[in-house]
Structures are given as structure tokens and as C-alpha cells.
Amino acid sequence: MITMRAKLHVGSVSPTVQTDGVTTQERLVFHGVAANSYPNDGSDEDNTYAKFSPSALFDLTLANPDLIGKFAPGDTFYVDFTPVE
Image (cartoon, rainbow, N blue to C red; front, side, top):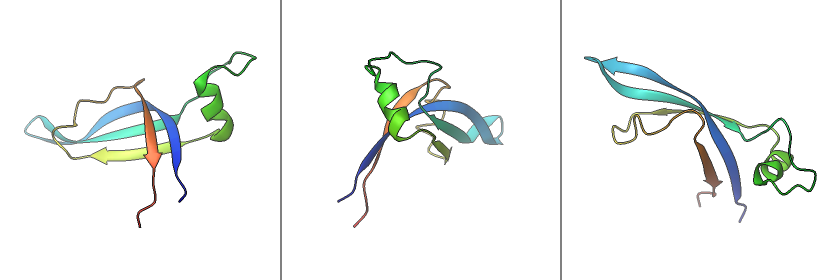
């Protein structure tokens, strides 16, 4: 079975639907981790993720009221991809 783990930063959070002043949907844009420089010994974990997944863009719209407002730009997450059988 093929599995993969990505490490992503939240790049932006934008309300996409508002009803009576309440956000009911939110757009999250995630980017692969990267830095301007890494230690020469490769000890930074982001360095390893960036080496094997040098570019990532993940765009997600949330409509779950329990999750709206929980994500902020700069937050970092592991995202696991596991095939559905």
C-alpha cells in the first residue's frame, strides 16, 4: 500500500460565504513547507519535506461550523494520504 505524508503551512484563510454576518464557509490555502535557508547538515525537518516534495498547493473549502475559525495563516500540519480500498 502506498502512503505519503506531507507537511503544509496555512498560507491564507478567507471567508467565502457569509450569512447574516456569520461565516458559514471558509477557504484554506496550504503550501508546502519551505525556508530561505536550511542548516547545511540537513537537520531541519522542513528541509527533508521540501527536498522530496519541493512544491505543494492544497486548496480546501470548509463548511463544518466546528472548524471555521480554527485555522490561521502560519499554522503547520502533517497531511497523510492513504489510499481508499
